[in-house]
Image (cartoon, rainbow, N blue to C red; front, side, top):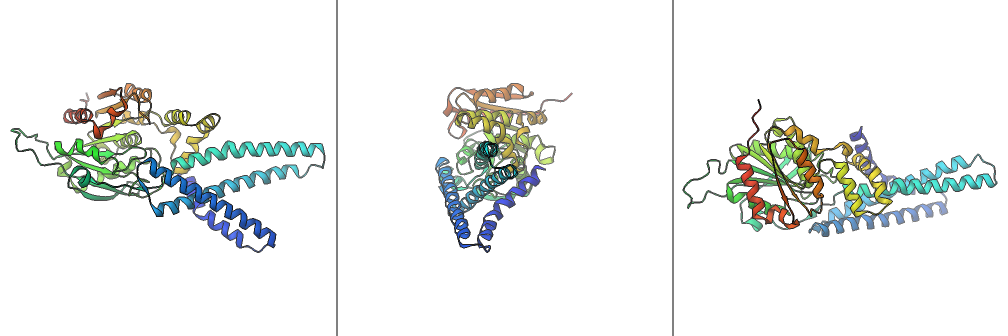
Length: 421
């Protein structure tokens, strides 16, 4: 049902501006056509401004540059979104007039008309505003980033083009491990035969997190870092905060096993916040790809999406808007992306990873996932598990912190499934 509603909404976004132009071209009196034209122009300008602002602000926020094609696409999306809200307002107005029309002129009609107007405003803002904000939060205007493994790490790499298990086109970078050092007497027998999948976080791409590969490539690990759907060079425009992205991780595992089987005798994953949620969902999957992940390390992970989103909304939005988003936001977002986000629980999925080991990294000042949520995930996770809890925000940035990188490598080095009796 959710997937059908998702397809319906996407179709509405695509055709709604075209339908609006068709209505404008319909025969009508001059005054009516002028009102229609003025309304459409106003909506188009507002939608372009909304979409353009969203694309530019998002690009600045993630340290990238807006793409012209994405500016135009996001502008079109903004127009469709405002047209949909305008249609919702017209529908509410029509329903109000339908209830008032049978009443005789007088005090009762005025009173009922006033109540209908108040009800219309309450419904318009009570549902329309959460719809607008929830839709904006799941939409990702993709940006351009400079940098690749060669410029950032002086490492050789190849571009990997593959698909998620539900058919979304994805792009990543395969970075082979460095050769073993010549000045070491005993070389690790697994050198070059282990691969780490790096799963970027909520607004990250392979370009913004490529430095993380520097914690693994010089130590005998191959790395595949890729863009999730709706990010970087991958297809799609909507994110589900890790739920549907688990299929992206499974697609990455499938590509590695098909193209580099000898270099992925052992397969690990590292994920950040929503990328961590996707990684957990993938490792819990009963498919051969999901079961191929030998161990995972997750940084800034939430146990339940609804609890995490409620905390984030409460932090960044004032009441009563925060209350409205907490009541309706996750449900609206789930309909937009075709996933049941209210029931999305990496904590429960994590139970299916047993007996494989999981490492949980959490910092007290994480800007995305509050410390207590990450700690709760760890406390309720089954053994075998390992925790690394830090009291400074900058210490959990794996790409820049040798200590964290060393802890993860040691975890992978010794990670073995718990014996099942």
